[in-house]
Each structure stands twice: as C-alpha cells, then as structure tokens.
Length: 587
Image (cartoon, rainbow, N blue to C red; front, side, top):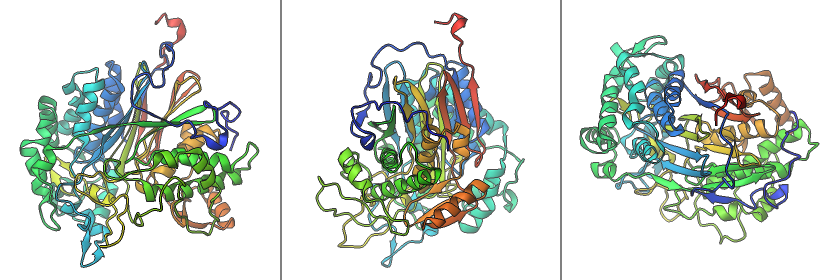
C-alpha cells in the first residue's frame, strides 16, 4: 500500500488525529459547507451504477441539464426493472444530496416502515424465532415501500427536469424489452430452491415462463411495470400510495403463507424523513455520513480507530490489522446502539465523542476474542437486548455528480434477493421487516432494533461523501451488501484516502468483513489469499469466501476531473460528460 497523500496535511479542526470526530457537525441546512463563493464547476458530470441501462438513463438526464437527483431517479427506475433482485418500487432507499452552491447536505430517508399491526413477537412461533427462509418469503416481512415517495419529495426540492421525463427511459425499456443479464438469471434457480418466487402469482409467470427460469440473453418485457410508471409519471405518488396499486400490495401482503398486516391506511400514511448529515474531519478531509437509521456514521468511528492504530510508517500488515480491528469495534457498537431515532435514543453524540473514541480504541480486541459493545461514560448502564439482526444483500448503490457539481449518493433495497418474492403491478414487494431483530423473549429488554408499529428497521446502507480541505467535493461512495456494507464502504474510503489506490483499484481490492468473532476474506484472487494467510497467522478466525456481494460505485475528483469506478462483482458501468477546460471561455 502506498502512503496516502492526505496524511501530512493538517486536520480541518483543531483536534489531534486521535480524535477525528472532535468537531463532528450535523448538517441539513444551506450554507453548511460553502463558506465563500466557489469558482465555476468544471469537472464535468458522471454516473455509476450496477447496470449499464441505469447508467444510460442517468446520462440522458445529465445531458439534458438535469440535477443529480433527476439522474438518480431515472437510473433507479431502470434498476427496478433490470435488477429486480436488488431494489425497486416495492422497496426503500437512502439518498444523500449535496448542493454545491449552498453547501447544503441533506439525508433523505425513504426507508420502509412497519405496518400498524406489527408487533415485537411477529416473527416468533411457539417460543422460537421463525427461520429466515420462512420469514423472508412471508407477508409478515413486507413493510410500506418508500422509494416512490422519495422520488417525488426529492424531485420537488431539487429537480430541474419535468417529473414525467424521468421515467421515460424505464417505460421505454419495459415496453420494448431488455436483455436478461447473467447476474439476474443466475439468481433464479437458486431462489426457486430456497423460496417461493417460482410459485407466487405474477412472479412465477414473469421470472419462470413455462416453468423455466429466464436465461441470459433472453428478451424480457414488463408491460405491467411500464403501466405503473406511466401512472406515477402522470399522477405522482398518489398513483402508488392510493387506489388499485396500493390495493394489490395489500392483497399480496395478506396472502398465505404467514400473511402480514399491511393495510391501505399504512400505505397512505407513508412519509419520508429529512435527517441530518454528520460530518467529521479525517486528516485534511471531511467525511460526511447520514444519520441513523443508516449505519454510515460507523464509518466515522472506524476511521478514528484506524488512525489510532496506525502510524505514518506502519507496515502493510499493521494497516491490514488496523482495518480489521477498527471494523470489529465499530460493528459491535453499531449492532448494540443503532436503531430508528424516532423510536429509540441513539447516543451518537457520545459514540462520536473523541474521548469515547480514544477510550474505545484502547479496548482493541485480541484476534481470538469475541467483540462486545462499549459503554460511553455519559450513558447509564445499557438496558438493551442482544442484537440478532440478519441483513441479506438484496440492495443496489448509485453515485452521481452533475454538471453543476451537485451530487447524490443513493443506496436502495428490497432486502433479500427479489425481496419477499411477492408481485404487485409489475414489481416485487420488499421483505424489509426481517431487517429488524426478530427474536423476542417476554421480560427481557428490547433491542434498539426491535420491531414496533410505524418503525423503520436499522439499515447497513451507508451512502457517503467526502470533501477536501477547501470544502470541495472529493468522493461519493456507497455499496450494497447487507451487514457487510459498512466494511465494503470503509474499504473504499481507506483505499482512496490512505492506501494510495485508484478508485477502481480500491473497489477491486479483496473484501474483508470483520463483524463478530470471525473475519470473512474474499479469497478468489492471489491478493485475497495473501490477506487471509496474514490474518490467520496473526490469530484471527478467518472465514474464506470465493465471492462477495459488494456493489461499490465510486466517484472521485482528481486534479479537477471526475474518476469513476464500478464494482466488477456486479454489472455496472461508468458514464461521463467531459470536463470544461478553463480556456473554453465558459464562465
């Protein structure tokens, strides 16, 4: 690993490198980062996402002068069609939006919400927690989708193009057909073995025509999806949250086996949330992460621990162990304390306090030890139950920068592959309620992430942005991957900001996930095998994996130009509009 070009520059705030969160600030108002008038943006525009059709939809909007939010909506509407195993209209999303002129950063929370009939014991059967496979495909697992509301709320605030135009690429593709990708086709036989996708009405006919799974290269049309988008384009969110589309969602959620309680009233009552973005210095930079129920602020903790565990002359092996141990500490705290802030008190101020981070780093676990959460001194003794959340990798991420320098980092999900497998109006419904802690025992303290009516499940989704010493955008990153998302995103940050890697090299670097007692290492490359050997020799319990579910899509500003990366573990690409040269005469 090469020494980072950022290590020698002074930190943004008057704190030591051992307390990078000492001036953490929460941001959701204009003029938060912009302190002086900035020169014109000349770096061009860029979009990167998990499917080339989605990237092209974003580029259509960017070429037309659209805002990054316009491009994100258009891209995600396409992802819901061509990558239904990962996200779609029946799921939820987190979107961080940066406006360069004002410096404003806002976290738009479009996470799914538990129905009013949800209860803490809804995944318990005869005193035992329901198995994940049964819970995954159940009506009980379906929450109120948030994506369409997120589309409308963010477009009203930022959109530069007509609302209806954002859906034209997806409508055309759904009507005329698209070629089934190898990744989508590869999921179908496996999902049929595990669940009910090949049995559920609508889904079975669409994904398994004549009883056989779709094949790569097959032309696939979805007229139902086109019709749904046409209605949303004409009528806005009401077309989705009221009327026959909402009725079909309720009908599907109420079907056997294990019917849920989702109601028309639940759907009609859905609202997004605008939440703060927490920014903290990392060396010469500022890392900005959305509030809970996202897990992105765990990145701020990981960066602090990593800096305390390394020195300027640290060896590659020492940096690797610091990378692992920083994850172990932050994951343990995330698992214990994070939840929906509208329902539980999440002590972020205490967890991000420099004195706690320094003390917590001193609790660095030996390689063979089982990680456990810390206790900030300002908190009373914890009365929260042990976290049991399983979070599967049915998610997608996209990163966009527009021609004005505005940016979007958006992670969207239906939870497990193909969500609940239940089909409504051309799309799949989520199984997001399994992102709650499903285990419940009367008389024991509830987990921070326990089920409750109207509550949003904690999410590992971590859309992030990084700004340089001049408060100019430096990096947009994020990934799918369930509980592994914090590790994947942390890797992208360190790869670019500390290890001297290009964005694509950082994305391609073997994934290393250190949540709990074992360290999972991606070993299908020589570099991954070397990492596994190094960690095993150091005493860590290494779990070797042949492949990982990351989908990192990253944009970095380098020398006044945009450099993008798409994760080769998925099917993404990078699209770009050229930078404007200073000599062009442009203002």
